[in-house]
Length: 102
Ligand code: SF4
Ligand code: SF4
Image (tube, rainbow, N blue to C red):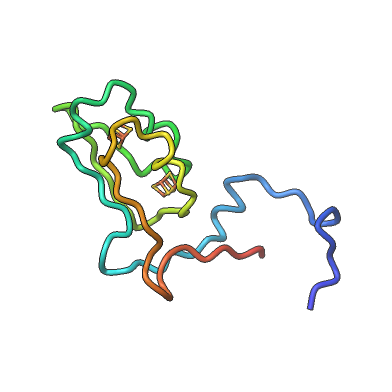
């Protein structure tokens, strides 16, 4: 067992910390994005808000989304300005992101 305290942990850049995350991908998406709702969205806030960069704009005004490397932070759900455009839940047991400090 480590004897590090929180304040003694060596500094680690965000990108380096995220690189230690493991994604156990569930067969079923835990976040579903309704592309029709996205076409009328004026902010497209999810694109800049998602720390994993999982929302990509399409040429027809929609959004392309992939759930496999989701950090499960819930930010997209909070910033989405179109009710019902995002259906969000945690992945099924044993699946999803695993954070490790190495
Ligand atoms: S903020 Fe919501 S409605 Fe707007 S593009 Fe993103 S997911 Fe779609
Ligand atoms: S929960 Fe977080 S990491 Fe996952 S898609 Fe939404 S904003 Fe991106």
